[in-house]
Image 1 (tube, protein in one colour):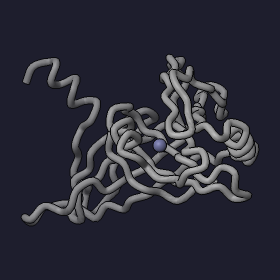
Image 2: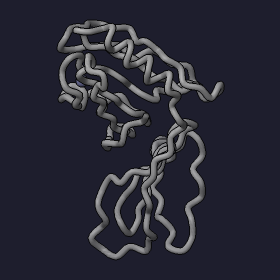
Image 3: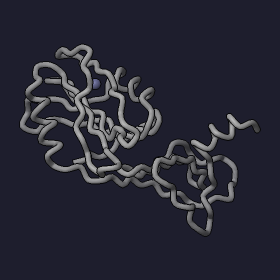
Length: 199
Ligand SMILES: [Zn+2]
């Protein structure tokens, strides 16, 4: 194998789940694929999110692997963040709205970043992803559907396929209601899974 392949595979190694012991712990900013008796999983770890998601069913042959448990651990999001999001989303009506919640690993805190908006209307919001510092990464990519329902549209699906990284995408709807709708999902390099609300 040549060096470039070695480097590529180092970024996403595949390991077998031991049958009688534990895997070595993942370090921050590492990812791996895990082959288990019950399927294939992806594990990703950073200071704000540590998760293991199932991405494929078990192989149809006997494999000498142990059972893999999925999990999701998240650094708690403060209540003020949700309050700010709801308030800003309402103020933007009838237009859609967008915002990024970034985790700063050096300061161990969440920060609000308003991305550069390219166009905005009651039926779409287009924005440019900002250049982040090395110690920052996107925790939530948030946008609203204004007065419409919260759901992941074809455009949202395409965006999450290309953005890359481990983050949540949240879409809000019915932003004029007392209790707006929220849909949340976890993304790992284009693979995504619906999750419970973060707050
Ligand atoms: Zn959308």
